[in-house]
Amino acid sequence: MQTIDDPDTIQRRCESLRREGKTIGLVPTMGAFHEGHVSLMRRACAENDIVIVSIFVNPIQFGRGEDFDSYPRDLPGDLAQAEQIGVDLMFAPSAQAIYPKGFQTYVDVTELTTGLCGASRPGHFRGVTTVVAKLFNLVMPHRAYFGQKDYQQSVVVRRMAADLNCNLEIVVLPTVREPDGLAMSSRNTRLTPEQRRAASVLYRSLRCADEQVRAGEYSAKTVLEEVRRTIETEPLARIDYVAACDPETLQPLDYISGPVLIALAARFGETRLIDNLLITAS
Image 1: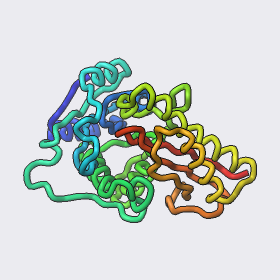
Image 2: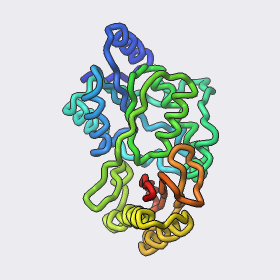
Image 3: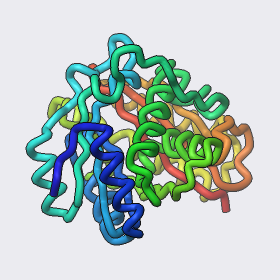
């Protein structure tokens, strides 16, 4: 596996691969790999001739006071794991390489970013879509792989790719979970043992919502009240938001008559975790 840190070099390499008729799969990441990342890389390896993984902790998607400086980083471990899986190229640029002096162009998806994490983290998705657009331009992948845990991100990126005629397939894979249901996240490593045990309440609350909807409860307000009550049984949890949304538009729902996204975010100490569950009313 080759590691490249220069944007011009990765672009030239990918142009050459395209001319050779190779299909390219891209897995954009911020590193600190867990089994969720591994599932994306394995799927990409199964579906493409060449797999490129990017590792870039993107400064412009972190707001003031967020955890950019303390975000988990393990480049040597990530490189070893990716090579073992069968990744062909690792793109690991510096912030200066991605945002050189004088950089002033951003990509902004509007309506889909107003709620959920977009409301809690102003400017976050502008940072996400800007760097992902740059990665699409540099790597020119046929497919790009994302996880459902970051559901809003996947919807926003799909919209951006369609609007900007990126000519690639966005592949979204199911959330990978710990045995107690906690969604795997690089940020989980920042939890204390007590916070880690407490964090399992998030998935329990989503399962409660699933049981309610499948039992015939169609009032979003009632379902969300139960989600909140469940999370609030855990003293270490501080709710950021809970929401019931249309899975495609991300608009809030009052009445559940078909597929619904139950999404939430909560803090355990200084660590903010997100999760979601797609549910279909009976």
